[in-house]
Length: 121
Image (tube, rainbow, N blue to C red; front, side, top):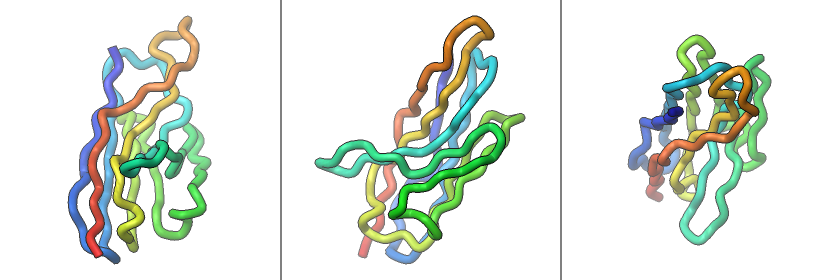
């Protein structure tokens, strides 16, 4: 059983910062890409940032220059540092991992339960 658990969400004023963390635990053989997605009320879930096992990153245009993503492969964790937050960043943020639970199983997407980020103006 694989679990992704996020932490670090909360309420912050515009211009402030938050750090989200996610740890993957359970039966894990290897993790390919880890990332963060978000879903605002009435909107579809969208990609925020991803990072490969080798450290290659990608970001949504809306967060470039403000957010950074990092991971610790030894600890199966991924962190999203969010700076210069604005009200448009308000959403539930979900951790995602593409991983193999065992050597013989294919890659599969796993999701965390989500953590609320609210940015007040």
